[in-house]
Length: 171
Image (cartoon, rainbow, N blue to C red; front, side, top):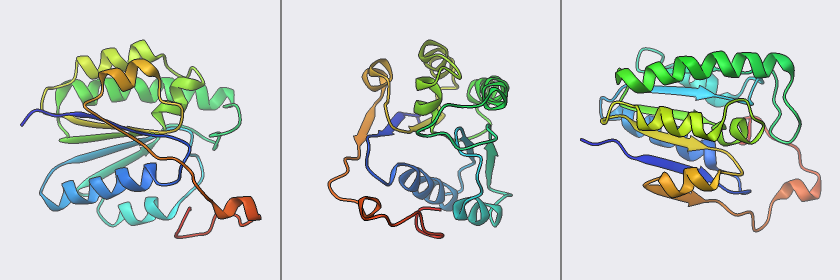
């Protein structure tokens, strides 16, 4: 089966949640899953849930802080660049059926790696690998290359009422 390129972007909630749902579905079908997280240094409930399936889903973080709306630290930049080298190898050799690059759009936006490098890694992947890229501000070149693009738009959000991220819902 030929792997497709999916992009989940937009300013609405649910991009990572959708990607993790797909990871669960793929695991249920006996597929091997690798999840790389950029720009998310904090611990989250999905990370703890994935640990229950660590023999079927691998999750690696390539960052030390969370900077979805802030600038990355020098450490974040170094970790992301090293992590991206690992991702290129994972994509090329096809040991996973599904590779999720969570917040890779943000990593490109902040120049942790370039859009051209990301597109080249996608082009050089084993043809069977399904790739999902999440995060706000998806690059135009990536959206053009993708087989599926979903934009999640915020219509209304309780953050505007001062409600902070809640464990098990946003964290």
